[in-house]
Length: 386
Ligand SMILES: *[C@@H]1O[C@H](CO)[C@@H](O)[C@H](O)[C@H]1NC(C)=O
Ligand SMILES: *[C@@H]1O[C@H](CO)[C@@H](O)[C@H](O)[C@H]1NC(C)=O
Ligand SMILES: *[C@@H]1O[C@H](CO)[C@@H](O)[C@H](O)[C@H]1NC(C)=O
Ligand SMILES: *[C@@H]1O[C@H](CO)[C@@H](O)[C@H](O)[C@H]1NC(C)=O
Image (tube, rainbow, N blue to C red; front, side, top):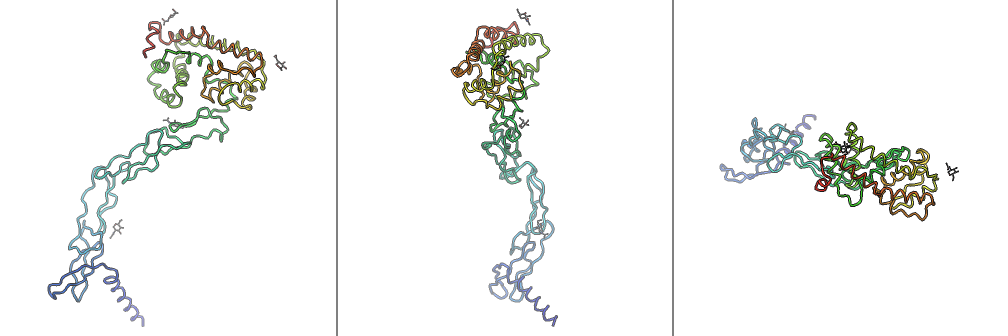
């Protein structure tokens, strides 16, 4: 009983292997003058002997370093490729069914014949599809709300930091090239980012000085990365403020610099004289902030500022918050302030402050500082041509 079954199985197996699934090829048998349908040989083998009317095709395994990757009627197998190309490594060694498979090394892809290095996506765009051994990197411009500040073959665009989620304020909105900069509890720290005097100095009307180049020329080479970062983050109108900060941090030791700081201090004291003695309430300050153009500072921030800053600094801090929020020109805003809603003493003082920041004494300060930054030998005129 068992014997019969196993015998049947063998027969079935034989049939399916040789006649069931195998593709055929036509062979003309010269001995019998007949045309035969022979079985092809499976991958890894070649035809050692064609079939006859009595027996099926005889296949033999491919010899060492040869392969056949298809069903075939070939008399021999193909040679495996001997070596890989430049910048390639063996991914799969040759065996009887596959040729040796070479791929470009990491970071390279095959472009027709040669391995080329994966392209890098410049700042403002990110990797959408990383390169493979067969395909180049695919870059895409960073969509709204994302950025990339690096040149990279791997880095995708990243989401802008969500300041609100962290309980922080936005100090500077992000772009496709740089991240949003958050400001820590801005209304709580009384530190002022850019003072009115610095603004007045660098925004002097009909400004003949190219502050950007003056400042950059006076900054040491070692700060070039910081300079680049400033240029990346801030628009050209704002860059002088932050370059000047950098300049200040680099020149604390020098006498001419100390004179410069003294001059600016004189100006800062003048500013305080105008606003320091004002007895203003939150309500007054809300009105003042609403009289400025652009996005107003909200009441919460005003309340916090009043709580945490001493009176002389309150108004200055709020103006600084306004400037940051609007990327605004405070000097111009003070000049164009809509004062009709303001309380009389406040109105008067804000007008005076506006005049002070556009006055002749500011012009003198401006000239002095140019001379000091430039050294006494250099002519003022020379700056115009920079
Ligand atoms: C040859 O290599 C390929 C790829 O690794 C594998 O799929 C195949 O089974 C191998 N053939 C033999 C006969 O070992
Ligand atoms: C890129 O942005 C990240 C996140 O703001 C920052 O940490 C990093 O220093 C920046 N890198 C460059 C090269 O600007
Ligand atoms: C400031 O004004 C408030 C209310 O107008 C008043 O109560 C307070 O005494 C004033 N303080 C000073 C120092 O003038
Ligand atoms: C530049 O000139 C001023 C005023 O004449 C003088 O006080 C100062 O010492 C001079 N500075 C240099 C570096 O010569």
